[in-house]
Structures are given as structure tokens and as C-alpha cells.
Image 1 (cartoon, rainbow, N blue to C red):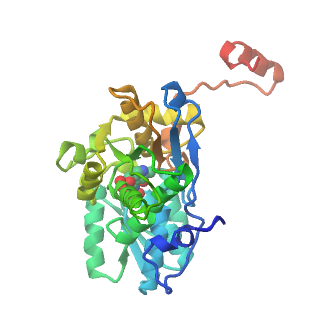
Image 2 (tube, protein in one colour; image 1 turned 135 degrees about the vertical axis):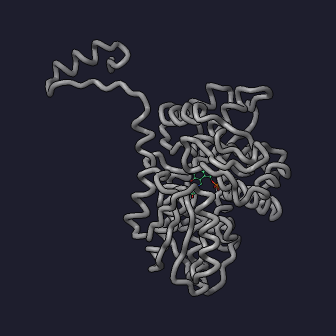
Image 3 (tube, rainbow, N blue to C red; image 1 turned 180 degrees about the horizontal axis):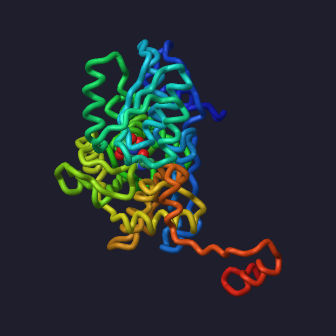
Length: 359
Ligand code: F0G
């Protein structure tokens, strides 16, 4: 493994389904920071809480790790176009990597349910956007049917190359910590990412690169929690639009990851997600999108519940960047002092609020 800054295909070539003919494309994905909590963990008596900042990938989400592999393999196989259904991040990533490689990208999106930053990405990267009057589950079903009839590579996480690329995030966690953590907290939507992390942790352990495997702690939004409920949800609802999914494609594999790792798949409410979203920004300086905060919301639920997590090493996966969902950010209540352009007015306004004064 090279220490030089390279994308996923070069850094983890030995672990990926590459051939000499696979184009080694690279937008700088992977090698994302693992940041230790300075406030949230210590306040709960958990010194070893870390955040894996997948929001630092080129399109601002973890999807880029799997997409670079899926698009490279699509190119190798001679495809001229890729297609995905998406709640916004997969489409942004597919559009970017397709543009990078001169492929066409088709994205099937649930109309009116995509965070504006994500839609902006697909527009500017030049994808052909198909806005479908339905939810994500409808989009994925139609995407699969479309790809059966047309020469287009499906790059959703049902494509095993996506999972192969995404598992490299687990490798990085082990590489950075020196071993697997005790717990891995992760949002669950279509359930590809929890599947990929578990595959990565298992592979590292099998190759002797980790001495143990973490317990996989997956969290769905309460209004979109089919795995927790044990049945599909017809009309999933949550403010975390990225994980508004009622019938995850990798359902069975997520359950296997949970059971094989002695983990859990639980739900967190929108209120818990939003509280975690604000705490992460205001107490750690990490701005994520709401779906990503489900991992911290899950950690907080466990850390404050019976048993606690104090002696353990926990990693929360921060799957996407907060800038993708500016509407949600602007809905956070804030105090703003409106003042004329005068130093005296600024001083008077700040001094009137003792806790705003710098001294
Ligand atoms: N977090 C973010 C920011 C996501 O965009 C997604 C999924 C997840 C978590 C859940 O990951 O689906 O592998 O369980 N987004 C997909 C998309 C569905 O289309 O962008 P998962």
C-alpha cells in the first residue's frame, strides 16, 4: 500500500476486482480523515469516539469509493453509459465519474425529494436527469428494468463493484486505528454501505490485517425503518432524504452483517437525527447531511442507554457533506443581530447579549 495520495483503485488495487485492462481512474476519492471526538465522546465518558469523514470525498459522499470501481469496470466492459436510481448522492457520484470518463450518465430520481445541493451536482456534471413521480424504491425497480432492456451499466449498489469499492472505507479505519474498532455506527438506507463495511472488516481479518471485527451498529430513520420493523414500508418518511427508503436492495446482507457481528439494526427518530446533526456541527465542527447524523444519533442512543460504551472504541461514519442540504441547514434556529454599518452599533448589540461578547 502506497503512502502517496492516490485514489481507491491504486491504494487498494490488491483488494479490488481489477484486471490489467481496468482503467485506473482517480478523482481523489478515499483516504478520508478519521477525526477523534473532542467534546461529544469525552462528555459521555467515551474517550475513543471517532468520526470517519466520508463527506470529504470528491462529490461529498462515500459513494465515490464504490462508483470509481463501478465506472472503471463499466468502461472496461465497453459500456458507453451508466444508470442509477438515487436519493441524490449516488446520482451525483455517477454523474461525476461518468463525466470524468466521457460516459453518459442517466439518473432516475424521486421527483421533488432530492436535496438541492445533490440535484445541483447532477445538473452541473451533465447527467440526463429522469425525475420520476414515485419514491426511491420505484426508481430502483424501474432502473433495473430499464437496464435489462438497454445497453446501460447499472451502477447502484446491487452492482457488486460498488460494494467492492465501498469496503475500502473499512480498510482505512483499520489502517488508521491499527485494528478494527469495537463498534461501527452507520446509517442504513438501501443497505449497501453496511454490507460493504462488513465485507471489508471481514476481509482484513481473514488476511491477518486486523485481529478482530467490530460490532456493526446500523441505524434507519424511524419513518423509514423496514429492517427494524421486519417488513417493507410503502411510504417511507423522514427528513433524512438520503435514507428515505422502504425496501432496501441489500436487506438480507445487512441482516447478515448485523447477526454475524453481534450487532444491531435499530431506528432513530427525526428529532434524534436533527439533535445529532446540530451537535456534530456545534460541538465538533463537522457539518454533515441529516442522514449522516443517524450514525451519531445511534451512538448517543446507545451511549446513554443501558450498558454504555465507555471503554470501547467507536467509529461513526459521516456519510455525506452538510452543504448538500442547505434547506435543512437554514432551518436550524439561530440568533442573528441585524445592525447598521457602525462599530458602536456592533459593540452595543454584542454587549447587550452577555454570552455573545468576546470578553
Ligand atoms: N448516508 C447518505 C448520505 C446516503 O446518501 C445514503 C444512501 C446512506 C447514508 C445510506 O447508505 O444506502 O448504502 O445504506 N444514499 C443512496 C443514494 C440511496 O441514492 O444516494 P446505504
